[in-house]
Structures are given as C-alpha cells and as structure tokens.
Length: 233
Ligand SMILES: [Fe+2]
Image (cartoon, rainbow, N blue to C red; front, side):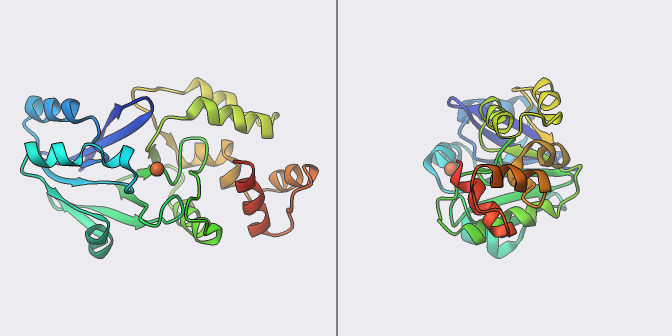
C-alpha cells in the first residue's frame, strides 16, 4: 500500500512523496534537500518526479531532483496519457482537473488526493484559465470521490481561507472545529470536512444561495452561484 509524506517549502508551498516499500515519486518536490535526506535515511529510491501543474513555485525542485537521482520526469502529457502511474503494483490515478491552469492534475490513491492548487484546504484555487464551466467540472469530478478522501493541497492557506468562510457564513458551526484540527506539519482534511466549511463545494446548498442573493449576486442556477462565488475571490 502506498503512503504519503508532506514536504513543506518556501513560505506556504507543500510538496509530497508518494512511496511504497522501495520506490517513491515526488510531487511538487520543491523541498529538495529535505527529500534527498529522507531518501538517504530510508533507502527509498526516487523513481518519478511529477507536478500538480506547471507554475514555477511547484516545479522549482524538478531539475535538482532529476540531476541528483535516477528519477524519470513525468510531465503533464505523460501523466494524462497514462491515466495512472504504477508504483510497485499500486496505481496512482491521474485526474485532469483544468481550471487553475490548463495542465492541473490531481493524484489519487488509497483514500488520498493530492489536489495541488485546484482544491485547497478551505477554498478552491484561482481559475486562471478563465473557463469557469471547465473549472466547475473539475471540482465536480473531485466531489464524486468518497467523503473520507484525505485532501492534501499545494499550499497552506488554511487560516486566511477560514476567515473568508467565517465572514461569508458566520454561523457555520463547522468552521471552528476545522480551525482547531489544524496541523501545519501534517496538513490534510477529509473531503467531507472540506465540504462543510468551503462554500465553493456547496453551491447547491440553499444557505449559500441565500447568502449570495443577499449580496445582490446572481444565485438562480448552479453556474450563476459558482460564478458569483468566484467573483468574491
Ligand atoms: Fe499555482
């Protein structure tokens, strides 16, 4: 069974190692020295280097990792063409989730989702493609996963985003429980927990519709509510 280990770097980026008994894959491995030290200490061999999307803060460690190990780089085209990456007989499923960028992907295995800048803990990413309908399809794809799925994101913006949610929905009882559970060293929440605090994952909730209507924003259709919420980012 594959495992995950987070490697935070820079001020709020988080990269990950997905690993089995011997082999590992780096996803957004910007924490190069930490990752190399971990490989050395555990005897794990880095087989693959990949990214959740091609923004430079996520790809910053690629060149170094590829130079200092025998790992193979799996770019967007390879990831999406393969559909899944095998590590010791276990599949890491690749979900193409455009919206933040055209080349955004999520990595799904066991009950774990590495969601990059598509879905953060507490909010969704910014839709730089401008294709709001496409981005909504990507989020719906994630929402079809089991609620127990653990969401490991590309940045830690938890406190800022909880403040946003609290401002939008002050009487949401789940926000404080979510805040108390915050653990920056092993940051994840289940998809169920995300849905309860994140208004972008509840666009069909009557309460969210009423909040948007109160603000004078379009709220009749699902897509209007989605656009209205994106306009608040
Ligand atoms: Fe990004």
